[in-house]
Amino acid sequence: MEKYIENTDLINAYLNNTLSKNEKLIFEKRLEIDSEFKQLYNEQLAILEGINRVGLKAEINAAKQSYVRGKWMKYIGISVGVVLVSVVIFSLVFKTEITKNTEKINNQIEAITDVETVEKSLKKLIEDPKELKEVIEIDDEIATSRKATRNDVSIEEVVNKEAVSKEKSLVKIDEVSQKTKPEPMATELKAFFKLNKKQPQIIEVNTEKEFTVTCKEGTILTIPAKSFVDAKTAKLVTGIISLEVTEYYKLSDMLIGNLTTKADDKQLETGGMLYLDANKKGKKLKLKKGRRIQMTFNSKGKKGMQLFSGEENNEGVNWKLQTEKKESIEEDVEVAFSTIEIVPTYPGCENLSNNDKRKCMNDAINKIVSRKFDMEIAENLGLKGKQKIVIDFRIDKKGNVGEVNARASRKEVADEAVRVIEFLPQFIPGKQRGKPVRTRYSLVFNIQLEGENTESNSVVFVKSDKKFIEIFEKRLDSIESSNGILGTISNDHIARYAFATTKLGWINCDRFVNSKKQKVKFKLKIKDPNGTNVKMVFKSMSSILPSKKFADEFDFGLLPIDEEVIVIAIKKTKDKLYLAKKEMQTKRNPDLKLDFKEVTIQELKMELENLNSSF
Image 1 (cartoon, rainbow, N blue to C red):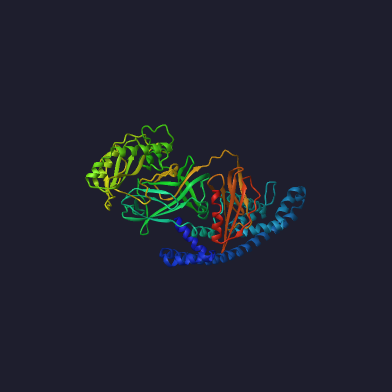
Image 2 (tube, rainbow, N blue to C red; image 1 turned 135 degrees about the vertical axis):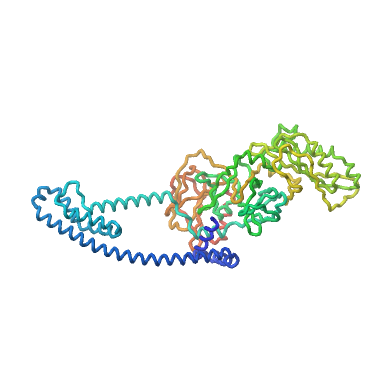
């Protein structure tokens, strides 16, 4: 539905001639190659034609109503004439009685014979013909009345009071609606953000195997085998699929993508955003129920980070905390040794820092492999020189070693590597977000034999028969790794944020901002605000806040006081693009003047990229 709305907004912008020349070319090119989009375009033209016909019909109805009003106006003129004549006669016949009750009668006569008041009443009545019949009946009663009492009120007064009351009510309703309902983003601005959003990285994934990949900007994704189903039919998808990944770590990418860090009315600080999508030959896919993509963000150093999903709306993306029970997620999740928050602990390495525990474990395992491995097996096979062996295994959430896999040039050598690893003692399990999880550990070691190296093109994979007592998911016989993760441990990955998600779409690694500073109401006014989008970037944290537009005013809500921020405004009107930015401190309702300058799209991107270092 969101995609349909975006496309119709884009078509309307094209038809209204509010796109730039470059955007028009992109639009027209898309009409040529995208048959589905062209069909939607033709449907929109048909709808607009229908609207024109409805407008013609409305004009006919308006003429008809004008005729009816004219007819009623004649009736009203006659009725008012009768009322005025009746009043004159009443004044002459009962002159003495009127003199005795001067104050009473004068008040009544003034109310009835006030020509200006009567004209206003007539105008009101003409605008609402439904009340005419009732008004004429009331006029008749007044004309035949012989005596006016203190509580009697003329029809003109009644009509005027009701009109004023209704007018005041409408003004109040309008004021309230302006305060509670912000104006939507301009169509040409929506089209601008859509056309210039960041392009995804497309990765071909074999669904038959577990797949680990490091994306262009450092995000690590691990996808279990057989994880995707058709979004419409829910049938399992096999073979090669296309995974689309768009990474957002830079401020400039977030701003040009119209992204902010807000969950409803709560401010967030981000550790990176992703957009994940999957398809097979153009057919949309989703994750199979119970499957989770493990992800490690290319960011680190902040405590209390959580995983959020994004919901697109007319103004951008609103973030929602993922609500699955953590216990059920943690039971299934598997975290690589290189990225886990608290590493598994080898016996004897307990009273060390996390980094030292990691080194202590690596040294201990290498010593055991070197001491226990039977070199005669390789010698008896006639192998010579350096022989490479790749091993990976799991440490479960109770600290048990299992699921040992080995790759070597000969099966006998791989079998011996598996046997040696199964000698490892029980560990203290690793933890992620404070809970024990299963950890994947990989290492590469070489055995050195006499003679020159024996080249071998064959690689044999051996899987251990030893299983975990608790197992939640069957693993396939091979693991495809596109980033050479086996045997490579980087200290730079130690404190990175690792999560598991059951959803595709918008994903955000965030934490709530709980500032202890006093909060102030922050809003600003902009001259000629149409087509303008205003955001605020915080220098002390990775946070971008949106504003809500009310006429010429942009409201940011309550903000912590005395924060160093950058106000950034992007304006799009027809073929012209403008940028304004201002560094300042947050304070109550600042008197802020933004100086806009015209820029090209390339100049805009360069200006925003210059701000990346402050984020």
